[in-house]
Amino acid sequence: MAALVRSSFLVDAVYAASAREYGLTQQQGQLLCVLMGRSYGMTELGATLGLAKSSLTGLVDRTERNGLVRREPDPRDTRAVRVALTPRGAALVDEFYAETCRRIDELPSGLGPQERETLAELLGRVVLDNEVPVVFKEPDEGAAAGHPG
Amino acid sequence: MAALVRSSFLVDAVYAASAREYGLTQQQGQLLCVLMGRSYGMTELGATLGLAKSSLTGLVDRTERNGLVRREPDPRDTRAVRVALTPRGAALVDEFYAETCRRIDELPSGLGPQERETLAELLGRVVLDNEVPVVFKEPDEGAAAGHPG
DNA sequence: GGGCATAGTTCGTCGCGCGAATTATGGTGG
DNA sequence: CCACCATAATTCGCGCGACGAACTATGCCC
Image (cartoon, rainbow over the protein chains, first blue to last red):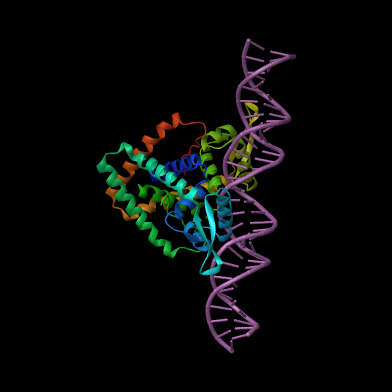
């Protein structure tokens, strides 16, 4: 199914271009998107993003250096840290997220409303069908985190 | 269209997992796939993969070190180099490519034959609609190269 | 054959991802 | 109460990947 592969590249290119315009790397964009809504501990973030803890330290370091996220002490566990958006990060990710969604939405602009709905339904099922088996996954299989959302 | 984004992650995860099992990085896998069929010059490869020349030198270096590709002198231009698969690289990419395609094909296994065809048709149109504008792209927009193929 | 274009490489810089080792705190059982 | 194991993060060293700028060497053309 070449179309699946090619559409995947399309989406990735859109995401990458959008991130670049907002001065973000794809990973930093992803981090900010995950943090929309609530703060996360480092371990929790690692699980969500499918990264090793040590990878996360660096990602959060760089994003923090850019003033977009902040490490806050966890009131319930002095070992732990809560990673949260700064006001600047929150403002940025709001724009980035909206803009990225807008561009993704435009990809199927050549399709009629009926067709778009069909596409969404079919893809939705493909995604659902293939996310259940994640439960059975080998420990070495990196999982993909949901995106702009 | 969240389904588009999520399916894109799905495909990427499949590609990454497949590459890992064959001892390849995604980039090296991509390089090998492009080289199936014929050899390329470095500049030509850069255009095809959407990479700067300097990025390519390293990628080809590492892949060559692994014995999968080879730099051959270009008979028509002593400055230029032809990058080609070694026998080992050719054998490996045959398997890798076939296996990756097999796995991608399995993603929509929950859909009926009719639905798969519809999905392919719709996605095909989305891809087509969105590859033409590449002609107008700004020089700073990295383009995605077609994949397992 | 002087001068510009083209093909590749080198160099330095950064981001990213990992595992192993480390530090510090939490929790629990004796 | 404290020894001990578990857990939360960080640090370190490694390699891959991507880039731009500077460089070398060859081709090409007037």
